[in-house]
Length: 374
Ligand code: NAD
Ligand code: DAU
Image (cartoon, rainbow, N blue to C red; front, side, top):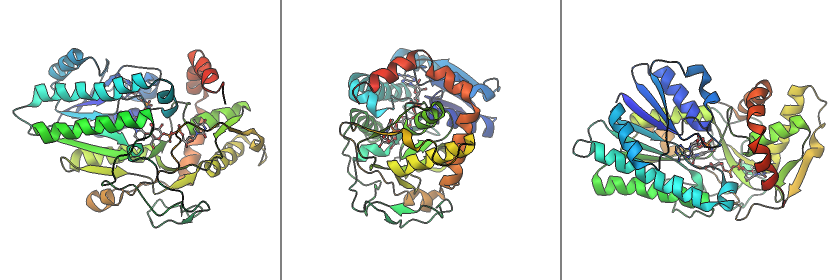
């Protein structure tokens, strides 16, 4: 496979995947297709934009004719599909955009791939990036945390807890709750249907919460780092007891590379950090790390924690079991969480211009609107 179409490459995870592929595979042509919505930012790819094996195309995945033209022009033989509307809170306010982009956009890419590849699927691959949110929510049976059953290189000495006995497996029944996760679930079904009906070589992966550089500051970690720096309140939804399983974004990109090249056709792989955190505990780690790196005495920013109205339908706990990926392809997270968080906080503090370019203008209006009732 030589001509790889990566959709959503100007976004958070997509930019890390594009960077990895452009650097690691000089013989591939990497075509980054992105509509550049509010979440797409070509600044994320400044360091590789002039590489000879990299091409950027501004297009909407929902524009079927345009997608077909791009497939033909670049003789695409592999797709890594990340383009999506990705923020749960936005999906609660505007579900239509989520159905349009995440469902119809995915269908338009699948159909273009089918038109161009059908008859000879050899060496073709359609890899769809999805989320653990499609599985719904797990119970939080151990609010104080119990010893996690998973041990990995990245398991932290400081924090290695699980907040319930159940985990999401590849076989867990879909049970999405938010308009975002419902749209992702629907897109996953379409991808699998194109394998089962037409024989398209597809793969789906479902990953847990990513963190790291270049994440849009509407998401918990970059939002809170930026607010602490500006002495602004940190809006904790509900009691802060919801649990997420955090994975460093570069480790997700490594998994995507491995699965794209070595994963089995028609399979699903779960990708996770083996790293559960209750929001409030994670927030305390972020505050401590930001204060430390800013040279503030410990505790300086604790008063910024502000409990606000909970997110509607807020899923209580996500926790991924990615043993299949570990056993079959040998992947596991490479970074300890404390290390990953420190790298992340340092990156946002060192790249204030990147943050300020985003948080000026339109973002201000969005932020005011999003938090006006909380
Ligand atoms: P993001 O919001 O940062 O980036 C999405 C990108 O898609 C942006 O560059 C945007 O411009 C582009 N895009 C949106 N609509 C488009 C359209 N119609 N046509 C072309 N491009 C369009 O998202 P992210 O956090 O990087 O997530 C990427 C993918 O990974 C998504 O599919 C998401 O569901 C999935 N995912 C994310 C996480 C996470 O923690 N962020 C975890 C698991 C899975
Ligand atoms: O699980 C994978 C998913 O992780 C991805 O599919 C999504 O694209 C991605 O956005 C992320 O979804 P979450 O809703 O878990 O991420 P978010 O950063 O929005 O919120 C993380 C947790 O923090 C969640 O329990 C809600 C809470 N939160 C979030 C924000 C933005 C707050 O308490 N306050 C906030 O201001």
